[in-house]
Length: 113
Length: 114
Image 1 (cartoon, rainbow over the protein chains, first blue to last red):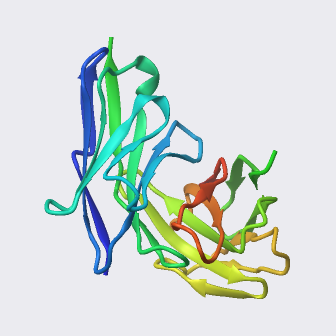
Image 2 (cartoon, chains in turn blue, orange):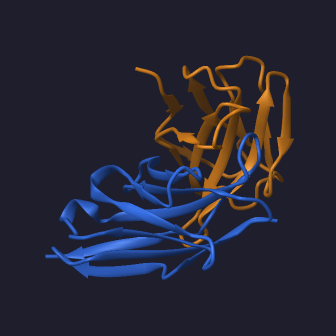
């Protein structure tokens, strides 16, 4: 069975500081991994996805994530936080095709001016 | 533009009433999904459908019902049997096979039981 663990339900950073949101996964086969962002009262928007093409994945809004098989991790980073990055972020795992997508519980990012 | 449309955005219901949430997509996706979102619990799968006229229960199907009569549409009914229906409901879709499993989401519907 696949699973996702997001460490830290709330993360606060200062504007301009590094953003690091942690995600560890468990999967019985090589996984597909995703990061989604959700703004209040809106749906989820895909930030980036890992599909085995490259371990370092670049997404929208300056975010990137690195797939580390040995650590079963897929942490999300951004070098410099912007106020508009304040949102909730979800890590998700899938075994591809029509297989189930499993979501983490989410991490709320607060950006302090 | 292609996308997923959920309606209504906000809905209020009295206890004991059934309510139906609409989800329509024009992405030509085969599979459609309903998730429930509660604070601190992430997304939980209610029902999903891989093809027309077929659907399966997810992790928390009790008190909910769905239909899939058209490829584009996957309405969710929250019945009076659902004990705690106040939540944010998200509809999603994707291609069934030959893809990475990426889901596309609607804007959500917030249901409040008075």
